[in-house]
Length: 120
Image (tube, rainbow, N blue to C red; front, top):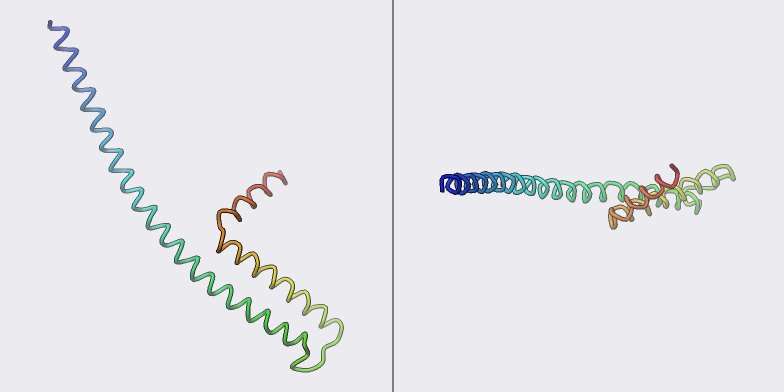
């Protein structure tokens, strides 16, 4: 009988220890979840601000290169046209990348990871 009482007492201690551990981990998870939500909000705010800043600057660059290519301010030579075409094409590519990242960040990260793995 003493062995049985000891066994029950031991099981109760084990159960209490398990319960305490579970409650502690539950509190830690709740705190981690709060921090994750804060970080997610901050990331969204940053993406929104960066979206505006990048797109504004790129639209100015694209617009001015188009004006210059249309020779609105005056005639341009072939070397200038070539340089302006490079600037315009690069700005368009960058705008596409910014838009893709801001609209589908997970997809962009997956593609970057896949490319990195393929390139070894």
